[in-house]
Image (cartoon, one colour):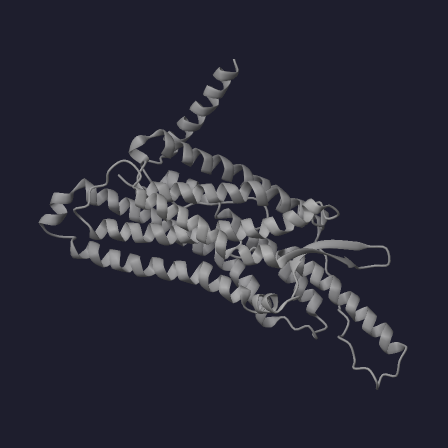
Length: 389
């Protein structure tokens, strides 16, 4: 019948874009810029009449830095997520493609979700590890660096959009499956589902366009002979000023609250429908079909819960900075240092969502059993060896 999952562990520091937009290194760049600005103001005020110039921002009481041990731990964790995410999602896609009885509406949405995760893992993971270790954006001195600066936030936000919209589509599909008791689940992917998946990808990409427009490479002098390049959004136009002001709230609302609200509504309706038909001839007549649909609904519910747990800390981190950061606070750099570590931790937790889905599915679903998944993977490796021989 039908199946679903809970998956996604990613690689490196970020995803999503539902929130991985102005990444953690932007906090470092912001701190460096503010520190430089403070020094300039102090120098200017000391050489002029203090009464003619307003006082500058107070100097930071602490410098901002990332401990080397944190970088290495984060890098090792990122590579682990990368490996698990690629193997898990590729195996999941292979199972769906190889078994004709798995090619149906919900599994098509699951495959769409897995492809979005793979896209994010392959492109974003390695580059984010590089940014953390080098503390500079890759290819910053080349035109390709500017292209990457726009591509990465775009891929991040697109990937999160794919996850969110697929979750909503899966919740709606499970509700329809439970309500339409007489609907027979046939093999093959309906054209309606194909169109739905195409629309999900197109809408996700469209909503990510502001990221590609806003992000640019900027170079900053943080010392006499030291410059850094970072990829961030600066309020250079009225649109970017508006976008920066409301971006974190928009991301929290559309990419987090809306999918959870929709899932809660449809699962509430689904639960009511299941309880209403818990007893009677309908339950006895449906038999195995009812059991299978419950299993699928359980898998999708697990997917939604994992999504919420993985993404909540990152939203909390971004909104916390938005609400408590004070540019005139002498301890602001210490706060940014804490937020930087919290940001990377939250980003890694969010990226787990890109590889944990297959793992959850392998344990929750009978059709996606761990045994059959390992057999599929070993068969793939054995086939490659035979072809090479």
